[in-house]
Image 1 (spheres, rainbow, N blue to C red):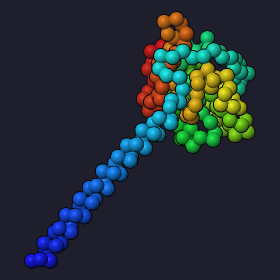
Image 2 (image 1 turned 90 degrees about the horizontal axis):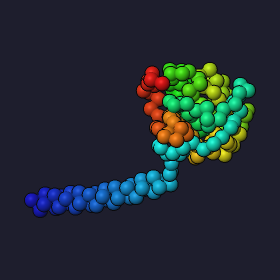
Image 3 (image 1 turned 90 degrees about the vertical axis):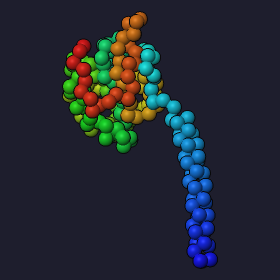
Image 4 (image 1 turned 180 degrees about the horizontal axis):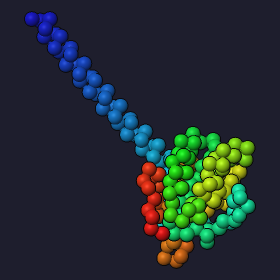
Amino acid sequence: MAFLIAAVVFVGLLCVLDLILSLGVMKRLREHTELINNLSGRASIGVGEEVGDFTAGTVDGGTVTRAQLADGTLVGFFSPSCPACKEKLPKFVQHAAAMPGGRDRVLATVVGDARQTTDMVAALSPVARVVAESAQHGSVASAFQISAFPSVLMLAANDRGVPAVTETGVNLDRRPSRTV
């Protein structure tokens, strides 16, 4: 009988110790989550913010400016050095192909070394006006204050007629609205 009592007390103490350690781990995970959220900040300008002024050359010899960004424009930023970009690119291309207004309503910016961006540019060119920038601080990336890749945004003119972000982190699994 004494052995049974000792075993029950031992198991009870183990359970209390496990509970204390589990609570400590949960507290530490909350602290880490908060630290990570504070570090990551935001990837681009926020909803309601105006796009900065820019003029950039497209890979097909055209020019794109802030004034040419119409209501309902889909904008994407990709980099060949970003594994998540490579995963998201096919969904972006599929979503862009279904956009009302065609490639005039889609702007894609590929940031990176020209030799490494050719595959992304080739995939995006049929469905978007594509700008290739060699540095993250190029005119288009700067106008959108891009700090993380991939970034996908939707735009519309604000009350002053200036393109502003209406959605960040666009859900590429959802079909685009056919209203223009």
